[in-house]
Length: 68
Image 1 (cartoon, rainbow, N blue to C red):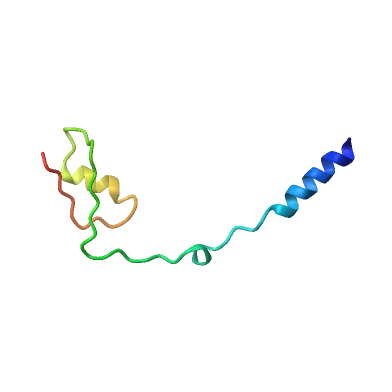
Image 2: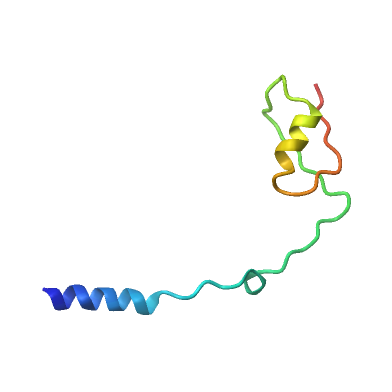
């Protein structure tokens, strides 16, 4: 029984691959200058400044507008 468990561990170890570098998986493509993100279902009390703060965690926010 111990031999079967050992074989299973060895098999799974053989299948595992080393993680790839980000560059190998895909290259970052700069979005076009006119790229926009529309966000719906926001709370009524959110303003443009707070919305920008939330998205700045992911990157640069050039313009943030909330239509009320």
